[in-house]
Structures are given as C-alpha cells and as structure tokens.
Amino acid sequence: MKRTSKNPDSFTRRVAVLKVSAEEQIVQSQLARRGYLPGVLVGHPNTSAVEMALERFQKNYGLRKTGRPTDTTLDVLLAPGCGVPDILREGVAAPGPGHPWPVNRRSLTYSFLTFDTDLPESTQQQVVEAALARWLDVTNSLTIVPTRNSYFEVAFAWAPPRHPQCVEFDNSTLAHAFGPDDPYEFRRGSLHFNTAVRWLAKLSGPGHLLFNVALHEIGHILGLHHSYDPESIMHPDYSHARNDLSAMDKTILRRLYEP
Ligand SMILES: [Zn+2]
Ligand SMILES: [Zn+2]
Image 1 (tube, rainbow, N blue to C red):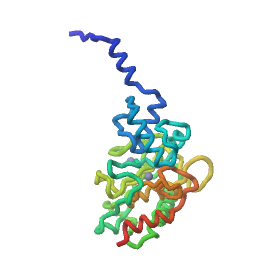
Image 2 (cartoon, protein in one colour):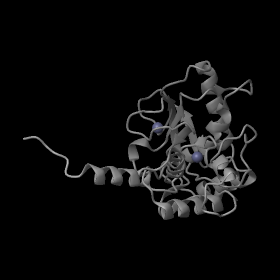
Image 3 (cartoon, rainbow, N blue to C red):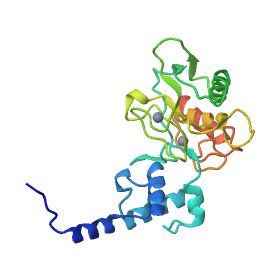
Image 4 (cartoon, rainbow, N blue to C red):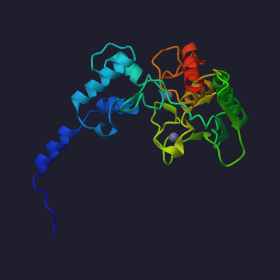
C-alpha cells in the first residue's frame, strides 16, 4: 500500500520551527561539551535552557552575566582545551574538592597504549612522564610507576576524534581523562590525547604543548576537577603560558591524599 503524506505543509512548518541556526548549534554543542547543557537539547530551540547555561558559564569564567552569546563569551566558549565537562553531573561540578583514589589503591601502575606521529615516541613518553613526576613530587602518599604487565590502573593513549567506548573529540578538544570517580569503571585512569591536534615538545610554530596538556589531564587522573583560577593548571582552557602547578593545585592534591 502506498503511503501518502497527510499534510506536508504542516510537517515542513514543524521542521522549520525545530531548526536552529549553525551559530546556535555551535554555541549549544560547546555548552554541552563543557557540561552546561544536556546533550539531548543540542540542535533544538530551547531559549531559556541555553540562556541559563550561558549565564552559569559566564559566571564561572568571570564574564559579564548576560545569558547571551556575546563576542567575548564566544571567544572563551570556543577556546581549545580539555574535553572533561566543568559540570560532570548534578552535584559534581567544578570547582570542587575532587575525588582521590581509595586508600587501598595508592600504589598504582601506568602504561602507554598508543602514540601520535607528530613527535618521536620516546619524546612523547618523556614529556608525559615529566608531567606525571611534577604532580607526584607534591606528595609521598601516592606512587604511579611504569609496568610491562597487562594490568595497570593508569593508561596513556593517543586516539582519533572518534574512538570506541568513549566521548568523541570535537574541534576544540585537545584531550580528556577519567578520574577515579568516573561512573564507568573500565575507563577510570584513562587519558586520551587527540591525534587531530598538532603536538609540540617545545614552542616551535603552530600547535599545542604536550607538557601543558598532560599536566592538566593527569590532574584529572589524580582526581582533581576544573578550576576557574587562571593560575591553576586545572583551568579548562589551554594556554602556552600555563605550564606548572599553582600553589593551590598542590594544596588540593595534598588535601586529597594526605591524612
Ligand atoms: Zn580538564
Ligand atoms: Zn577518549
């Protein structure tokens, strides 16, 4: 039996109403990436939800609270950075005290699963290990050592934007990592760098410094959440200049691990 459209005009009108502009779509997806807007709302017109999300974002990032995507807001919203949301789930939002590895799991091991092609593998490994050492120097209550065994808690890897059993990287996402309180146990301790990014060992042309990104993401692996303090390595957005732990970052790590 042939199917006939009951009323194409009404259908077309409904679709037109449901469409959002390309610019709105970008604003919505960035708000969703950062955890301010539920992903299911992206692509649908929902002015009040987007306005509330923008206000919360503007407040956190020290911007004028307008609820509108002003030029200054867009600059910050679209800045490249970490793929971990500021608001992980209701009640678990940055800034927060963080969530340490349990007391009986503080002698951990790590392994490198894959590498990128931008830099020699030994350089990638050295840079990530230097970032890890910077954090571990802060406390004696946690060790993370390399292993050749097939069991390890912490895994470093480079992955393309779409990779299995994980969140897709968008154009603004450099990397993401999953801490000890991630709801999915299998990915706790995983750090994924985006292979679509140009990785640098030192500032030499366009690209992003691997050390800076590794330092931030390892913070997540250790259980820290984002911070909006521009001095903190846990600030969600990338900067060439943000390349060390702040005094407060060290304090937060010690609070998490020291009795
Ligand atoms: Zn992050
Ligand atoms: Zn991933």
